[in-house]
Image (cartoon, rainbow, N blue to C red; front, side, top):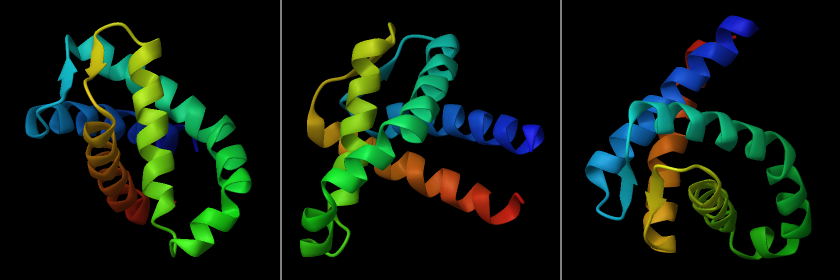
Length: 113
C-alpha cells in the first residue's frame, strides 16, 4: 500500500512536469514545487473532491460525467494558489493539465494493486 502511494506520488509529479512542458499556461519553478504540488493535489483529491462530486452530482449526470473534468481542473487550479512555484495562468490550462495528470495516474493505477 505504501509502495502504491509512493508510485502514484512520483507519477503525479512527473505528470505535472510533463503538463508544464506541453501546456503553455502551466509553469513549474522547480522539481520541489512539482513534488509539493503532487502532495497537495493528492490531499485535495482525497478530502475535497468527494464533496465537490456529491454537490455537483446532478450537473455531472446532466453532462454525462464531463463536469468531472471541470472539478479536476478546479482542484489543480486551486493547488496553484497554495504552492509557491506552481503557476497556472488560466482555468482552461488547468483543465487540460488535469486531463494529462488524470490519464497518467489512471494508466499507472491499472498496474498497481
